[in-house]
Length: 605
Ligand code: ADP
Ligand code: MG
Image 1 (cartoon, rainbow, N blue to C red):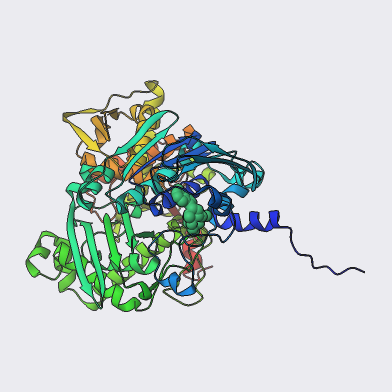
Image 2: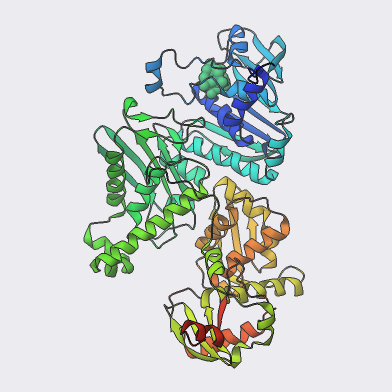
């Protein structure tokens, strides 16, 4: 009988390896851009067709590839960037594995046209299924143009895993933004479906680049941060404590010019802010860390988003200290601007533990939202959470939200209000026991239903509250495209937003229950909440998310004392709700404990 073990054919091993490098269109954009940067290009343009799902073209004016090297560029482990092992620790280029082009070519059709400045003729090559189909001389400008099409055509499973075009385009824009931030001297142009999305001229410094890439609004909130320690240096910008976001999407971290998503570094950033910003809020930051080549290993992960430091503690301390100085933590007086800090600082070790818990919480969210990246810092062997388990899910598992039938009979206005517990839960006594209502969840549901009703009644376009002075807001590319796509939904909610040219939108009206909201923050939060995960949700779902985010924003917060009349009006509104007992996030808004259950608790039964 023949043995069971066979050597896999090369076409298959290549595809397997490609899976590690090329996960989605954005991975292709990243690799092609990095190659262009490594080739010393000063101008790069990117064209995306169907959000990068159909085709991606990157054109650069870099050094080009000599005709005899072109086939090598598509050969696995062929690179011009390192030659001996020690080079691994000295690399300053993005690439060094020689894997990107062959990986891309194994899952798509690639057409490359390239010419070195010194040679009169260029080369045109077409690669399909990883093999060269055609190589000819070509007249072309100096530099390289790579067009990748039929992406994942031979791997239907991968194709199926792609999200919608807008989402994939968002991922592509994310990578372009990350690279553009790191290389201010390079001009970037990006178009999609024939429309220019981005045109960032060469900038003289990081400051100018950040302003142009992330938008003037974020830029206006940043302060410089810098520090040095044991040969490592940090420079960059970080937001003032007053400016926060509801996700960590605006934290950009780089090690030796390379964008990373690294647990240790994020932990350090959150630690610097932990006494100053509220739980589950995140700063914006663009931070560049440089360490001596031998002190950081970027060769950990195929997509190279993690690093390993020789002296992680030193790096951690450097960041906490530099950011602390930048935002004025520890300099007594500046703390006064942040009242919660003042009490908590004076407070006990319990308060300090609370901070620690918050940071932990923040970091947990970070870990989850940053995907499958492994941890190397933290509890050894800690497995990444499989799925985001919302506190809601936890609650509904071990308590008993009301069944719909029971609720059919209940009228909140008939209950006797007893008081508030933990600043958040309203406790009522009713005929057959006790009812506990989560004030935030309940109010959120009320506002959410109100939005839906008004949208339906007015057929899109519930009149909102017009702003006295329309607010012009400039946004990073991905946020901008998301927001402009969502204009019709926002309109239904009474929110009037229009494209304002360049990277800006103008907000003219907001839902009336949000008339006191700070518009900039509102838009920022709306975007980060709705873009978490798949931003190409079906229209209905996107609408639900936007309505939810608006309702959440305006709803009575937890930890706010409610006066009697407020409770009464909440009860009336609850009675008017359609009967389903969850907040729009899916958390129960109330829990009923029946008389029978109380008796059981006290062992009377
Ligand atoms: P790596 O970047 O890790 O070396 P790649 O597969 O991305 O591997 O590229 C292989 C080689 O092809 C590079 O080392 C480089 O010499 C050449 N190359 C790729 N893209 C370009 C480009 N845009 N301009 C010039 N040379 C390029
Ligand atoms: Mg490369």
